[in-house]
Image (cartoon, rainbow, N blue to C red; front, side):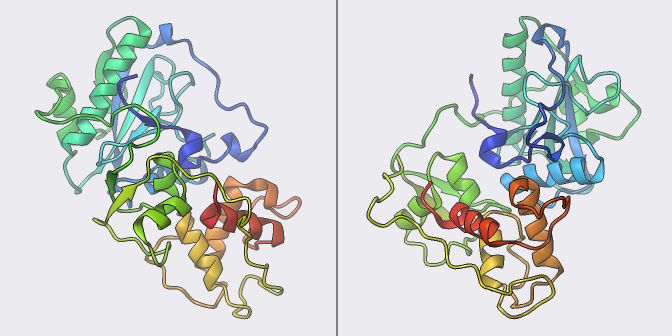
Length: 327
């Protein structure tokens, strides 16, 4: 494989249909793929890069459209990072009449927003080339509007498709491979969290904090350059991570005990936007973040609930272990 794809597990995708027992959308043989579609976001995405982009698309498709999960085969951020959606082997949900024959890529640009970056175009082209290799034949290059009447993928992307999807001069897709080499670096993008960065680069939040001397894991800045450890150190057997005790009485619409530590853990994992102001009150923003946590970890929901805004002791322990523990 010529490019690195961040798997559903790595970016924290929810179970298909929000059901851990679901096998997901039906499979499709690669031999049936004959087309390769380029899409845009439509509106301007709230997150142009980072794991938050994949989760944003997933929320739109599951919560907004009622689909099983991300409808595209892949999502490409403006930084060129590729996130798995339906992947190589599942029926898509991107263009009626073409979901079996067509593989689809969403590039994170929208109407009135920025133009597609060279890095994003290079990654999309690398996926196309890989798709042709895997299927054993040349796939037709198409924009969404070639399948149904729509503005998608917008004028810039459509012109690129019609020009043959050329690789911009000097641009290269993210290299395939595992753990980043010791001494390499990563520049923080909009929507990134330490947890997402750690998952994408084969390390842990603890390692990133230690390597970079980070004082507050909840506060990283766009443009900040982080050193990437080569290989996570083995967890200490003498000092295993222990989540803070669950504060008795913590509940929605209450200010005591304070919900600030819960909010910070949710921000680390991307369940709450970093822009939300911290407050002792367990208000709507905190409840929405906990619902997102439960959507990805339904085993911690209250029995029988489908939308659970209240975190319990078991969910609390798991949330903090994910955010701050050594994995």
